[in-house]
Image (cartoon, rainbow, N blue to C red):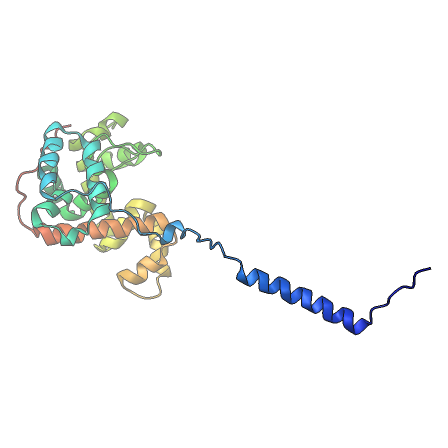
Length: 263
């Protein structure tokens, strides 16, 4: 019989350590293939908007859409330009295109008749419909100032318009009269507080009165902080931004140009 050769335990441990060190050394000498992961999409620089064009090119397009009364296309153009540029950095002529005073003769006349602020009527109209007389919302609000038929009939009785029909709300002459009267009524109810009037136009006077009571202190910023409807909060900001832009651009002067209130 052959005799078995026993390896001392200490020698076996040394052999094992030598094997491990050899494997580590071999791995260190082997070339590495580095993997670079792409940066997250939000971290990558965004390409410039393909919609950007020199402001001088907009004038002709605006005038063509005005002449053709293509209100839907004009609304899209207003939104595209506003999303690409800061209005305060644009030339005066372009800012006036972004904040036009369509139907201003009728707005001014009806605002005077019902003691409403014509600039506030104009700012609300810009945000409600982008001056599209055929605008209609999912809630069946119609026309330049987005009246629903029940409110239109209530206000209509106050201004001598009997049996207002849904189709009548697409007539600028009708809805501007209703809007001027309604904004005048809200202004009187809220002591000519434009922020509260804009809020009431969107969320209703009862809800606005509640927010006024919840405001921690007097002032527009405190009132905005008390508005709990995100839609209304953003709406008020947009209306008041348009109001300030109109005041900056036109002041109290008479409009130059504009469109008549024919549908």
